[in-house]
Image (cartoon, rainbow, N blue to C red; front, side, top):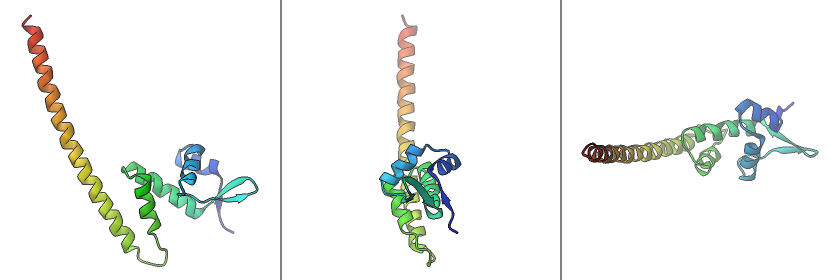
Length: 124
């Protein structure tokens, strides 16, 4: 017997709202079946949801997560998927390092401006 999950079970397990899960379904990231009018999610959908949320935690867009998840081939070593994931991780690290430099520059500029303002106020 195949294990299936309701939307509320997945929402509770992953601490997201049912609306979030429906959003991922609308975006084509999840493909639940139906039992009458009720959505039923497979173990594969559960794993996809877990990977989507993990990707979100490390800053991947939904499209980036989809691209990586779609490379999964159960009967292979998944080297293509892993290499793609490593490329995305490198890209994200470079992007974050650049943002970090920009933030540090902005913080220095704010401190200089703050010092100028404080100096101007103390001379009055």
